[in-house]
Length: 306
Image (cartoon, rainbow, N blue to C red):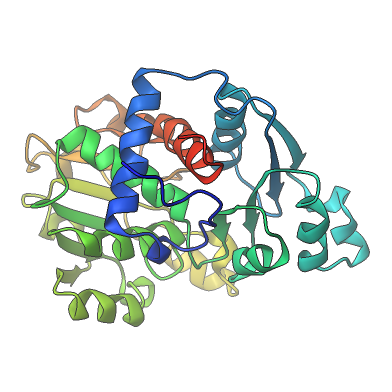
């Protein structure tokens, strides 16, 4: 399949066609089964994380290193000139002169686009505020296809912080390429933004909104859990009121379909108790591992090596 991604940025999942998404997934599958340890030898990744991260940062850096490339960067903007007041634009413009590709996470929505505008090197958005998280979405799609052997025809439920959750925003947008049914489970104040619901309706995607997991548990193939994100709330009282809104338990799963798989972008809090890990439905640790292979695929494709 022709690589149409060489030299491009991954700022928003909406910029990728269905064919490009499927190509990324296909390359990731090949790299998972047949590693290529020297594919990116001599290439340098800038890992610029202005916001906390474990899985995304480490899997991106590991992906580069396992393909033979090297990594420079930071996980704390306090050690950079950002602390002195340097603009994001200028930081990335300079960093881009030292590397072949840039991965950025930032607490402000639109930061990835600023980075993209600042350098001619490929930029990967690893999360910009409550906006998008396209690489996580590619991991999610790869994982759904891996555990269900298909995407079309599935019923997928997203639970928790759907208002501020960039992972579910990106996933809902990407699933418009497929014939799926979506269920959004949240309190009214944390429900999926209207603009995303409008896009789904415009593109003929079936969806419903609910307030309890029990309302749909017997129907769904994927249960995508998310935490209520304390860092997105300006009012601590509102967070405390909502933080325990959705807690999954064994009793709720008793009515689930045999093929149901539970996913979660992690980190988890009390919405996903440890007891769930031992069920046949848990698939979030495999999902996290898949981040390595999908990000390997992205790096290789954007750098034109596949």
